[in-house]
Amino acid sequence: MTVGIVGLGLMGGSLSLAMRDKYDELHILGYDHNDKHTIEALELGLVDKIADTLEELSSVDVLFLSVPVDGIVSILSQLEGILRKDITIIDLGSTKERIVASIPKSIRANFVASHPMTGTEKFGPTAAIDDLYKGKVVVLCDTEDSGELQLSLTKEIFANIGMKIFYMDAKEHDRHAAFISHMPHAISYALANSVMEQENTKAILALAGGGFRDMSRIAKSSPNMWEDVFRQNRDNLLEAIESFAKELNSCKQLIEDGNWDELHKWMSSANSLHNII
Amino acid sequence: MTVGIVGLGLMGGSLSLAMRDKYDELHILGYDHNDKHTIEALELGLVDKIADTLEELSSVDVLFLSVPVDGIVSILSQLEGILRKDITIIDLGSTKERIVASIPKSIRANFVASHPMTGTEKFGPTAAIDDLYKGKVVVLCDTEDSGELQLSLTKEIFANIGMKIFYMDAKEHDRHAAFISHMPHAISYALANSVMEQENTKAILALAGGGFRDMSRIAKSSPNMWEDVFRQNRDNLLEAIESFAKELNSCKQLIEDGNWDELHKWMSSANSLHNII
Picture: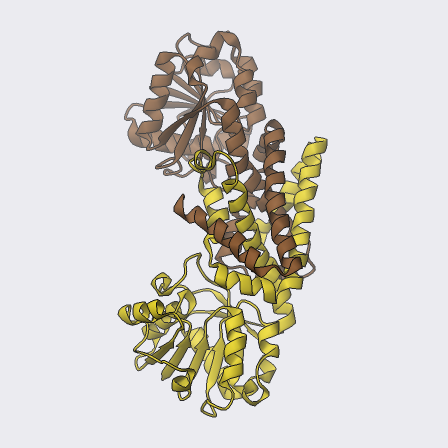
């Protein structure tokens, strides 16, 4: 199988490692606008060859788009008319509605919109790890518009690298992703910034235990990636932030009022998350 | 050495495991108002014997207080006049100002106020793990009021179980702890509650990746413990929550205004946390 990967960062690089582990005959062509990344990806063996233009990727069996979500929209507009007829295009973007809406009609059946619910706070080819996808969930969206061949190949690849496949429409995906992923990133960035604007940042951070480390880990995530996500999922994200802010405000109010019994109940209700995940 | 542990949960139980690993001759007496906990602690070998009253702990070499912080205050008032003269009392509470203020004068020199910056979201004797303290920070507060013998023994024990010792006054500790620990717990509880009040909680949570799991982990923490902490550190906590809410609101405003350049800068500024921890 020949594979093209547009975007040789954490997601694209880790995908290469995962697929190399499962497929014997694999020829991987990489494309990235960042020269440092293309050199690193070659050195790390993430790709066999670097393509200088998108045209050079036109005859691969599967083309993965693993760039920030605005980049996916932009690349989609450049793909029309240059690809082999039965190509499978799979994007790995964290938003889906805008991306699905921007697929040119002529290649709609070639496209499978996907969102692997995985990642780390690190980025670039050196961040690639071989088990990023293993045991994780991938959401496939609006699959009724994908071709049979393309959907089947996509499912085979994700299953082979150990992923659990969920199906959802793009609108529903974006709303859910705002709550489970995008809003938590906003919170983590805000938490990091609120501590760093204190006078004694270093003295405070010296006391960091596991709780703070876990809560601030994703505040180290790529602004290039997340600026795009926040823009594309603006309305859902704002709604999720408001829902969270309302809860935090309830907590604050209970503390201000010294309403400890209600605070205890509020905490216990959060505890019940334990029964679900 | 004979050791008394009041409170046989995660902190007290893990302390027993860590000390047993480092001290050959150790006799551990446990005390807990919860009968289920005393039975579990005996079964797990966390303690050699259960004391039925605080008086029975009066002749140990070191007495650890590892109950919720309001419990520590309450127990301190019951210890006066019943303890051997050179006993060392070490509390493991997450707040320090109120506790230090409540130490009876007659036993002030016996007391070393400490806060190990470690924990997990689990609680009770079965949550005890042998490496909870290893490599973690412990803050000792207002040590100028502790006896030389007591301070020296405390430092020896914490160093032996692998902890890094920091010194701070109780007031400063409580302010720092509000930002690095207490406020992040409020955020995590609020995050869990905001997702759980959505219509499709289960569908949303099915998509949880590492980010959400990390951010919501401490929302599973004990309400008994955290209600006390929030009450005792009320003012600092409210200030920390406000500081965080201000940052989150800036983020929200930038998204509403479509001010993506500033949002990118705001995210990049959070990234710099990476250079510190």
